[in-house]
Image (cartoon, rainbow, N blue to C red; front, side, top):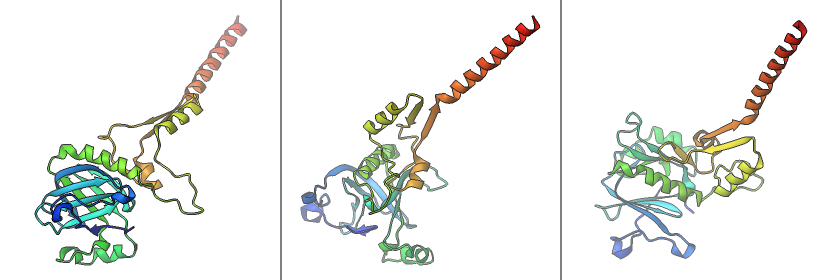
Length: 241
């Protein structure tokens, strides 16, 4: 499987239709969003195209140039998030970070003009933005990104601890809640409050996951302290009497 952003031109219908998927290996089309521009790296947004989200990858195909298209596997997306801050980017968009094969190309890409030239070196692209013409579609797109990312968990290398899995199923949450009556776990289900989703990265996931622990033991401790104070007060009154 190719790592990082790559060119994609495999279209059905003599090159004018939807992308050709790897159906033999179970790849399925999940969502189609027309009128989406894409900004690759620091470049200006491309002319609008169509965004295809499958069970394995994200594909963008230009509507004007049938030979132009990009694709990235979910396993190469280290982060995706909704961006609405005009100081971060002028247009509301889905912001993504892309993993590449070599970390050392990051420094080279900063002082290279390859992104501004006619020939775009995709191996150095670490960021990409999807800009829908209708910003109201951002939350829907983000939710689809999240669902498909969960279908592509990061492979666990041999010897790696399995303690950093930040994707929870509903059954797991119920089991955790039933394990102890004095601890309540609350996860935010409102996509408008969610700032991003990390696919298998502990540090990013921990900063995104909204987790609140209401420990009743603190309340019990306060009640015991109040009862103790009341008891001392009553005892003092008996001594005075």
